[in-house]
Image (cartoon, rainbow, N blue to C red; front, top):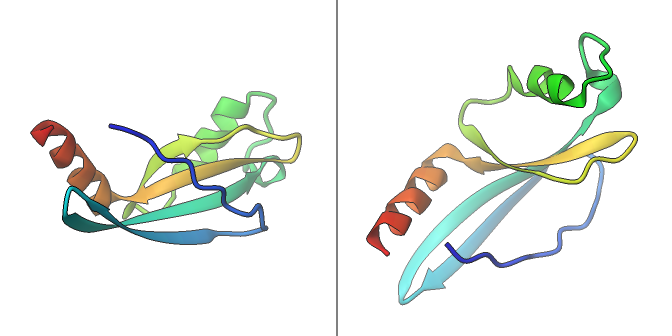
Length: 97
């Protein structure tokens, strides 16, 4: 599947992003969420950042699927989610290609 990069302003908190696209005359809506997860929010302090991310995501809203983990900073890691139903749509479109 091809990718298009869209710059999103880096603001604190959750960013809900809705994109309407038309591909070969077929229109669809895609829903993404970008959220900053702060290292200081880890329940059990750890030096292992992978373990920290696992802890932070363990109880995340099940309607959203992990899509992309961005470049971490010393304070946080930006994580992009896609609405689970949109992920299923994307997988079906890939199978048709």
